[in-house]
Length: 337
Image (cartoon, rainbow, N blue to C red; front, side, top):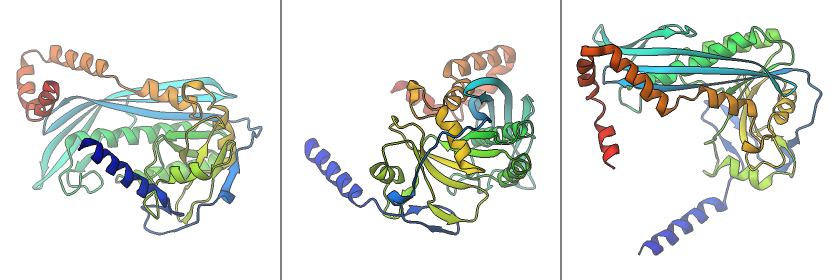
């Protein structure tokens, strides 16, 4: 019985990949897709670009949580390379306390920053569509993801103010905007980058973009690609401050990544390809591996921070713990499993 089911699953998967499609599907309001063909693969050339390349990533972890509050620890890490050598790195850390409260009959979330104040304290309607989960009210914990994103962008903006012509800023992830006021911050970044002649990019580790037939864009490009390091451009015509291409940054790599860019893509790709020769993750920039490593907050770190708060709270810990029981029943079941 089980073997029959597995065979049927494989048959269905086989059917789903036969017609991969020819055009990219985007979630933008208006765009004109262009047919994906072998003609649009462009070899990445080794250009003599004497520019710095700056990588930025962030991590956040929840330390305490209840239905009406969330305490998170957020870390942003930036590292700067010149001629493939690290010349600068910096780490920013802060606690984010998010609490719910009533405002004219509506539930809002209010944030407080304790530590490096690289973002502003804000209040957000819990029914803000940019943070809601489907039709449900936003979870107070989700505000941590929003705060981390804005912190990454602010660090990028600060770096752009200090770098020069031909330098590049690489964010981990796409340049798509999801949250209220994020577009305005990106506009500031692009305007400053234009003034300073700096390239702004976002490299995505994963890509969930589809073709017009529901296939994977990555799978289609993998089938058509040449045997060299390359970028694929253009994919579509649309009205954005940035463009999209796909890249293979090392000829020996098995990975293709989405790259969003605002600026001179040839200069960026020459710098990125030189930074993507580490056998630990061939074809992925070492600067982003470093940024991910030092921005990441481990489970062990979370437990240590939680213990410190428990000790500091003293007799008030029971009250906090009782509030946290409104959210931790799933954790108990997970531990039983």
